[in-house]
Amino acid sequence: MAALKKKSKKAEPNEVSVNYKYTVGSEVVFAGNADTTPEELQTLVGTVNHVVGVRHDVTDGLMYQLIRIEDKAAYTVDPSTVDVFEAVEQELTEYVPQRSVSVQNLLDAEVILLPALQQIVAEHDNNYLETSRALFSRINENFFLLGGVLAQIKAQHLYLETGKDWKGYIEDTFGYKVRKAEYYIYIYQAFSRVPNFDLQRLSAIGWSKAAAIARYVNQDNAEELLATAESMPFTEVKKTLETTYTDEGAVNEQNQSSKIAKTTFTFRLFEDQANSVQFVLEEAKRHFQVDDLNDVFEQIVLAWGNDYVTTSAS
Image (tube, rainbow, N blue to C red; front, side, top):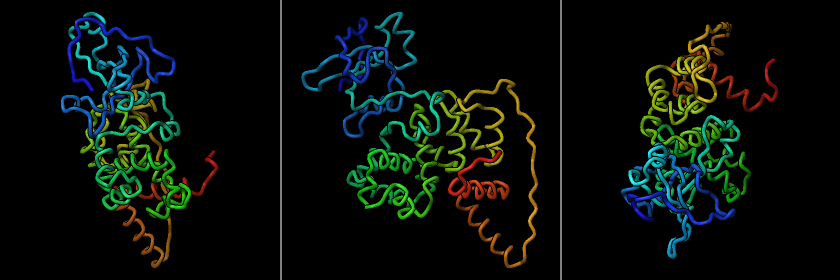
């Protein structure tokens, strides 16, 4: 791969075949390669870029000439002022704007192999199944990378190597329902499409908050959403998200929080039943990484409902 370089004029693309995955004018994510991406291009990994040219190289084959998406205007005025770099097709993934992707589509979208993911898999001899078990042993700090590994295991049907289907693989390997695995996958798929997000901060807020903000995150609001998740408990994070953002990550039309009606549930239990319920609640607090019992109760009910209730409330 060629390093960053200045162009004295606009890149002159060869005739682009319809068989090429990307064409001039396409927007792509530079995923790089953990083994071959030169050091000077490491800062561009995960960024969105604009294809300005395509050429054939005798050694490397098809090469895409790229500029950063924020440099498009400057490149149009004077190409010599903009850095152009080149990448092979295997180092690129399609840029899918977050605001146009539904939850299910994002779960099934192409998996972007971020360098951090490639590195951890390489440490386990490129065995995704083994990597998933290693990450799960320290799940509180590794839920993001586990989501990426699980996304790849699902996309490549690697779970079949265990002799089980997807559901059986998840339940037997990790001891929880598919729904939770899909939370991890969704977090990875959402944030892997956000250029230069802070993985350390994402890991620190825990998977529950990460899943909540993943629904709304895009490259414009990632910093704001992480700060929101860091500054308040999960229940308040959810309330803020639901009243401030749309599914596409934008501020709502009123640009203000609406009033939220609260419902109180009261339960009367015998002492032995109450002790059992209290034990479950305390375990759930640790499991969901939240302290508010209102939120713990909601998480338990929703987790059960996601697995066993197929009809929606009217």
